[in-house]
Amino acid sequence: SACLSRDVPFNYPNTIIHGLIKLNETQRENKGRVIIVGDIHGCFDEFHELLFDKIKINTKIDIVVLVGDLVNKAPKSLEVVQFVKKHYISPFPLYDIENHDITEEEISALKEYGIDVNEGLIDEYPEEDKYIYCIKGNHEDNALNVYKYLTQNETTIENDKDNLMWVNNTTQQERLFLAQLPFSISIPELSLFVVHAGLLPNIDLKEQHLSTLYRCRNMGYFDPSTLVDDDNDGDESESNGNNNDNDEIDNEPFLIAFEREVNGEPWINFWNDENNHCYFGHDAKRKLQQTQFATGLDTGCCYGFHLSCCVIDIETKEREIIQIEAKETYCPIE
Image (tube, helix red, strand yellow):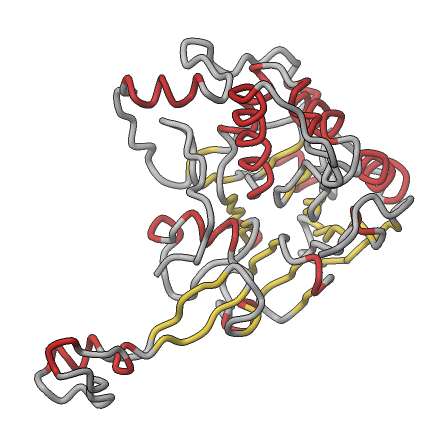
């Protein structure tokens, strides 16, 4: 069941949807760390200070995983994108990539985002500078849609309280970088994976709706037996579903995901997979969220609160939450 979403996720053709990180011997033998960082939202100064002053990252043995929503809200989105792109590592595919011949319709659609499919993502930086992995948040797609709107309508945003106009200054390579980001990253050696928002329990990653992975905040049980049966004079269908065996199966309540907090309860309450700790962002109003099986790292830096990360020792598997205060309130929280 899909997350109740306003937009269809941007799915760039023939790219990695679910990524895989393979740790190496250098990282294992030299006390390397995995640093998972919450939503940055254009807070470049805080992001840079967190990595280099607070954590004192060693870029030779540490790796960074960003939960998405690099952009919008605070004023330095372009600086964040340029920095992350420079140090970005493309993950291995968790599943086989289903390549297909790109259609004329896809080519035409991509041109509306200022992306030429004949120009792939150019890797112009040396390998020794690469230590950042990143997944896609809904605001990466939002930025691409804003670019499309601004260019098609030859307009600007008069009251740019969400700091969206930065996307007008992007290059095609920067837009392509945002478009091709994966929707999840897994590190099996540490029994963890990262998504932007949430996911339904007991469903394989490749079976999850992409909109759930980057928009879900809440979940709740839906009881199909409460649906009105049009062939039954408007009466509600039987909750015990005893017409036949198939009806009984179909009438079992099941979880659905919601984007807004008004329905259900936090999705983290339903996640109890002891073999896969899930790290996520997207839910700044609830700030830091922690259970035995999941950790939410969006602590609203752009709203004047904190930028948070979880630092994991590769050798000992010990975990520590580290935060840095926002330098100012860049955007009012809604």
